[in-house]
Amino acid sequence: DARVTQTPRHKVTEMGQEVTMRCQPILGHNTVFWYRQTMMQGLELLAYFRNRAPLDDSGMPKDRFSAEMPDATLATLKIQPSEPRDSAVYFCASGLGIGIIQPQHFGDGTRLSIL
Amino acid sequence: AQKITQTQPGMFVQEKEAVTLDCTYDTSDPSYGLFWYKQPSSGEMIFLIYQGSYDQQNATEGRYSLNFQKARKSANLVISASQLGDSAMYFCAMRGLNTGNQFYFGTGTSLTVIP
Image (cartoon, rainbow over all chains, first blue to last red; front, side):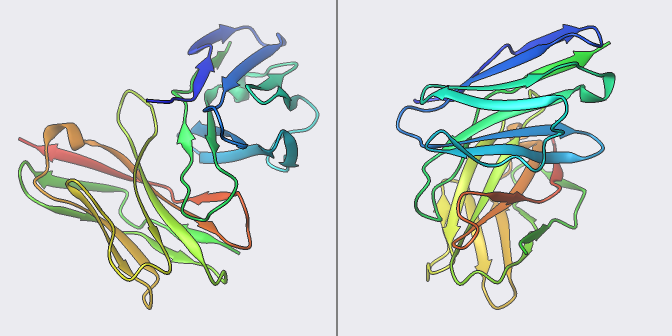
């Protein structure tokens, strides 16, 4: 089965360090989404792309977060500098951009802990 | 604006019994898709089932069925013959014609299957 691949699965780092999370969407999918999940806030949409173009990143703290798609097989989410409040599970999801009944498919997530 | 409401933070069901997880939605979109995802304790988000707003019949996928009542704006998930492995968080989500690629998620329902 085709899967969304996220790396790393786990990341522990100190406050102030740069964190880069990577996502390989399912081949042929033209939309990519980044979510953050915490106990307090639930699932929050950070940014999404269609055909590699950013469509909405209003959910992302712009001063420290950035999201890019350098090519169709790679999406990245960077945090610089990281803060303890960024500790969360970050999910990438991909899907087809047409058709309202097309679901998103999620990766297994990156569990990020900022000390 | 799109909104998904899941009013049951936690549910319990006896093994082999059926259970219904509630989901109501609000949208002004003429066409939309409704989705359910499962998140077990291991953390991954698993797509379960979808329903198009124009579908006359309720969607079914194995032991999962979606009880779609358009006039009531509800899209409840029914799990038949519950198994211990069904214990998880369940999220309802929606995608609208006019909101393009963005998905809107509910806050989730935690289901515990009791032996």
